[in-house]
Each structure stands twice: as C-alpha cells, then as structure tokens.
Image (cartoon, rainbow, N blue to C red; front, side, top):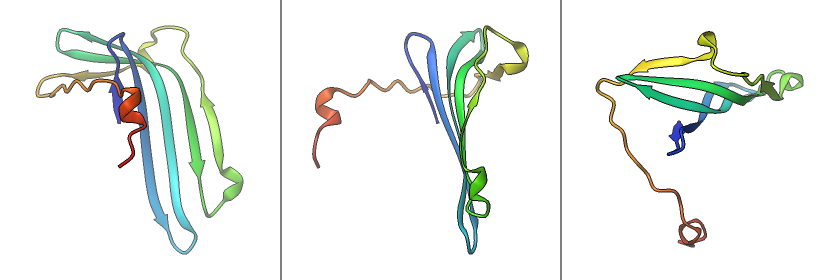
Length: 104
C-alpha cells in the first residue's frame, strides 16, 4: 500500500505472507519512504530509506529487521517508474485527533 503526501513524500508497506505448515506463517515485509514525482504521464518513486523484516517460522534465527540503505539522491537503478494512464487518484484527508481517538 502506498500513501502519497501533498509535499511530494510517499510511504509504502508491502507484505508477503505464506503458510508454512506445520510451522506457521512466513512473512516478509518492506516499509519504505521517499520522494514521488509526476512528470507528464509518468510517476517516479525515489526511495530514501526503508526496512525489511523477515519472520520465518522454519528458521527463527533469520527473523528480524534489516535496514535498506538510503539513497543520497536520485539514482536511476533505485527508481521505480510507472505510466499513469488508467490510474485513478483518490485524495484522502489526514486523520484528525477526533477521528483517531473515536471509540466505536
């Protein structure tokens, strides 16, 4: 899931899970932040920092987070580019203090 902010930053969380019977659920998670730029019909993502986290029920010694090295500036091999044709953009207002503490 990506979240884009008005100042050009973005945040991303990607999670891959896989059942590993009889041990449990394998999980690989990537969290990253960076700068998003739109030029014409192309979205360019420039990651700045991130973390990879592994949870392997078959080999717990591998579990835990590791840092994804930040980029010092735009590097073509670290950018993701995507055409925007057919993309629907939805603007979601940030949560307010009231909505964050509302009990249901």
